[in-house]
Amino acid sequence: MDATPFLGSHALARGAVTRNQLRTRYRAVFRDVYVDKNVELTAAAKARAAWMSTGAILAGHSAAAVLGTKWLDAAAPAEIVRSDRHGQPGIVVHSFRLADDEVRLFSGMRVTTAARTAFDIGCGLPVVRAVPILDALLNATRIEPAHVRAVADRYPGARGIRRLRAALEVADGGAESPMETRVRMLLLNARLPRPETQIELWGLHTRCIRVDMGWRAWKVAVEYDGIQHWDDPAQRAWDIEPIALLEAAGWV
Image (cartoon, rainbow, N blue to C red):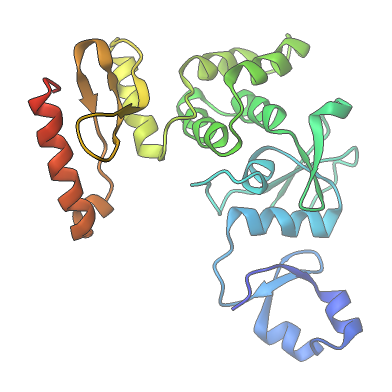
């Protein structure tokens, strides 16, 4: 099944579907934008549907999805930026000002840049909710917190700017899942030193051994094992050997 959104009016004009098929086989996501009724709508597909319906600049959650950010909530509203604040159900319309260099073209759609997207997410959400998304956005786009701070410096009085700066203090693009982010935040909330993420250790095995986070100085590693570490026999077998090698090398 094709999960790509399409314009119903265009499909009817081309004869690709009939009105009855459009009504029975597909469901409307936004005005004149449809998807197969049996597909699960992703955050990225919802973002594209919002752009197709409005032609507006994608921002926030939607821009993050288009830029490749993983683990986003597909049920969250799409977000756009335009001067006309009138929207439609399922779309949040922002009217904030965007500098020319804060918008880019991506896959044919206008979206806020990764740095501007991170700025808007950090300002708009509580720190505990913003950091996992910022981690995933930094991981996907390979930008640094410094790039987001540069945007923040343009808007020193912006609403939520303190939340953003607090989130950037703990954000880390090395996190490879929301649970890794939450584990790291637990460590920081316990006033432990900030851990290094995705530590690569060579020379203990023919393959590089990598741990989620830890502290080289004290040889302490912290791992969060997702379900694949237990359900996948090959992954589980590989997990056991590095742990033994790390412990033999003095790591905890």
